[in-house]
Length: 125
Ligand SMILES: [Zn+2]
Image (cartoon, rainbow, N blue to C red; front, side, top):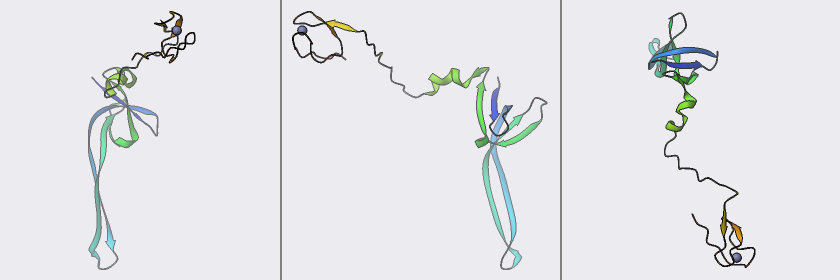
């Protein structure tokens, strides 16, 4: 199945075909010796081959792209799976009540002291 990428600058969507490195080599004449000692610059840039709705293949820099859909699912649907070791969120409920063990008055479970008898309450994790 396809991976759909968004070209951030143009807002155009493409099908991602593959990734690789775009190499460039620029040569300009050196100050001394001219073409005898040219300055050469070369580097590799992460690039992705994509194709548009007409099937035209293009190479775009990966830092200009954003994946929006994989196998028919939007990236948002993968959200939870992409977050590493997300601790289960403790449900914070404001309506959790307990009975004070001394006077049995209704107290909030996160209350540290009973408002009726003044007993120090143990907060249960
Ligand atoms: Zn109490």
